[in-house]
Amino acid sequence: MLRDPDEGSALVFDLVEHDEPDPDRSPAVPGVDGTVQVAAPVASDDADRGPDAPREAGARWRTVLTAAAVLAIVLGTGIASDGVRDAARIERMRDFGGAVEDVSAPLTEKWVWDGTVGIGQDWDGVEAVVLGDVLAFRSGRDLIALDPATGEDAWVVPLGDDPACGPIGISPYEGTSARSVSMMVCLYGAAADREVVTVLPDGTVSAPRTLAPSDARRHGPARPGPDGTILRATRIGPESQVDLGDAECTETGECGGIVAAGRDVELRAEDAVTGEELWTVTVPFEEAEAWECMDASWEDQSGGLAFDGQLHPDAFGARVTSDLVQLSGCGVEAAVTPDGVLLSPELRQGTGYVESLALGGYVWLGYNGPGRTVVYADDGTVVVELAGHVRGPRAADGVGPDTFLGSDETGQRLLAYAADGVPRWDVGAEALEHRFLAQVGRTAVVTAPGAGVRGLDIDTGAERWRWDVSAGGDEALEIFTDGRAVLLHLIQIDSGMRRMVSLDAATGEVLWRESDEAATVRQDVATGRIDDEQMPVVLVAVDGHLLEVGRTGVRGLG
Image (cartoon, rainbow, N blue to C red; front, side, top):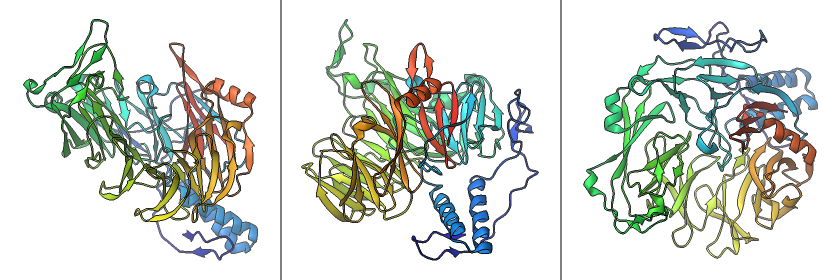
C-alpha cells in the first residue's frame, strides 16, 4: 500500500496481502420461493449490457494504484511517480462523499441509462443509494445497480408488488454529499404478506423474511432502515393523554393555538434478516403549536407533512437516510443515529436540527435563543458544545486537520476549531452565516451572502483568493472535489438555471465554467416531469465518477 507523501517527498510503499475476489462467483438472488438464484443483467437489445460477476467494492481504484506503483518501481520516472501520487490521492478519498477522479476539465456526457428512477414523494429524495462502488436504485419492481464507469447494469434484483428500498441516500436538499453504504433493505408485497430482503454491493440478496402483521399492529409498519435494519414507529400510551388545549381549526382551514399534551412516539429497529430487536427509543411529546400537527404518515418515505385544515395530534413522519433517522410531527422532533442514540438535546419542534458531517459525526444547531452547536462523534457521544453555529465541510479530501468553521454570537468573527473543539483561529466575518463548502489540501472553501466564494488558509484563516459567485449562480447546491479542484453545482434562484463551475482550490482560478447553452441542454435532457411539474436532478459521486440522477434516467459525466 502506498503512503501518500507531501509534495516532493519520497514515495513509501507498504506490502500488504489480501484475498483476490473469485472471478467465478456470481451474486446470489433469492427467488420467490426462497431458493438462491444468480442475479442477471436486465434483458435489452445490447447483449453485452451488464457484467455477470460481482466486483469487490473499490476494486477498480485499487487496480489503478497497484499498476501505477509497479510502473514507478520499474521505470523510476518522475511521470510515473506523479501517477502514483495521483492514484494515492484517489485511493485516500474513496471514503469521503463528493470525491471525483478529475473535475479540472469540462465534463461531458459519457453514457446514458434511460428508465424510471424511484423518488420520494414531492422529490424529497431519490430512492437510490451509493452501494459500495455502484449506484443502486429502485425502478418499477426491480432494484437495479449501475456500473458508474460504463452505465451498464451490474446486476438486477427482482422485487414484488409495492416495493420500497432504502435508506434514501441522495437528495437535492442534503448538506453533504452521499456516502457509500454497505447494504440496502427492500420491502415488497401486500401488507399481510410483506417480505424483506437485504442487498449487498455485489448483488447478493438475503433469503426473504415474511413480516408478521401482528408486529405492525404492535410496533407500527416497517420501513427500510440504515445498516441492514427495518424501522417501526408508533404512538404509545392511551388516547386519553391527548389534550388539544386551545388549538383549533376554523371552517376556512386556519389553525392556531397550542396542543397541550399528546402521546409519545416509540421508534424500534429490527435486524432485517432475523427480526431481532436491536434497540428502541422513546421520543416524548412536547406541547406543540397547531401548525406542527398537520397530517403525516410514518409509511411515507419522504417524511413530508400535508396541511388539510385539520388537527392530527397523533400524526408524525420521518426521513431516513444512511446515517440519521429524523422524526417530526405533532409534538415530536428528534434525530436518532443508526445505533439508536438520540442526538437532539432539545426535543421541542423548531428549536434546532441535526446535520451529518462529511468527515463523520454530527452537529446539532440550536436556534432557541443564542445560537449554539453540539458536536457529536459517530457513536453519538458529545465531543464539544460551542457558541454560535459551527459546521464542518460539505466535501473534503482527507488532507489537513479536521476543521469546523462558524460565526461567533455577534456574527462579527469567523472562528475555526479543531475536531475536539479547541479554537484555532478567528478572523473578521463578512456575513452572519458562512457555509463551509469544502476542505481541500490546506484551503477552506467558504461562501457567505454577498461575499462570494473565498479560499482561506486552513492554518491561519488568511484569505488566499476570492471568486464572485454571481458570475455562475446564486447558491451552491452540491460540492465535489478531486483533491486539487472544487466543482460547484450552482443554481440561480430566480430562473432555476443550474450550472457547473470548477475552481482551483489553491488559487481560486476558474478552470472551466459551463456555458448557458450547455447548462440549458444538460438540464433539458436530464430533467423529468411529473404532472407537468419540473423535477430537479441531483449530482452524485460514485467510486470516483460523477453521475447525474433524475426522474427519467441517469447520465455519466466525465
